[in-house]
Length: 202
Ligand SMILES: Cc1cc2nc3c(=O)[nH]c(=O)nc-3n(C[C@H](O)[C@H](O)[C@H](O)COP(=O)(O)O)c2cc1C
Image (cartoon, rainbow, N blue to C red; front, side):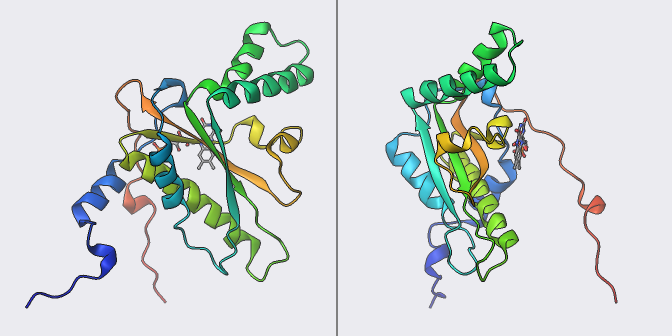
């Protein structure tokens, strides 16, 4: 009689999962094109993104999705903020800001909503938001699409916060750009394990 498999292994082969992990890389937002995830794919991606460890079950993160015309509308607001802060900026640079959110068909802002006074250390809640971003990238890769986790200035600008509806304790963990790579993805060197792994000894 064969050994019963735990349910979570039924549809996942080690080769498939490791292949996914070992082949993932970012696609440059500048080299991203349509299509992005369709509605069903995006739902899967966001659902997968929520399957992260979360000490205390606090759900210390949420998503803001930018698609379609919302990207241009947000870009208009970014360009206005940028121009106000940089009055000598040439029009071409302001135009880049206007088009910032048009680089990809879909952008998901992952918002960390870690609370400093929770029973769980704030650091752990922030780490959980990082795991959400990573799952988002992996689920995107699994759909044959590509993703890029960026922060850039809009993540840190006080004037952008109300545009995203951020509460005082909320921060942008990342804007994850999702789309189709316009060209084959390049990889980058990965750190050799011997440079980052030590064995603890007493
Ligand atoms: C939290 C975080 C924020 C990042 N923000 C930026 C950014 O603003 N601009 C940028 O060029 N890369 C940024 N990166 C790096 C990109 O995601 C980078 O392309 C990626 O790390 C490439 O590695 P990969 O191919 O293993 O994904 C950020 C990475 C992380 C983890």
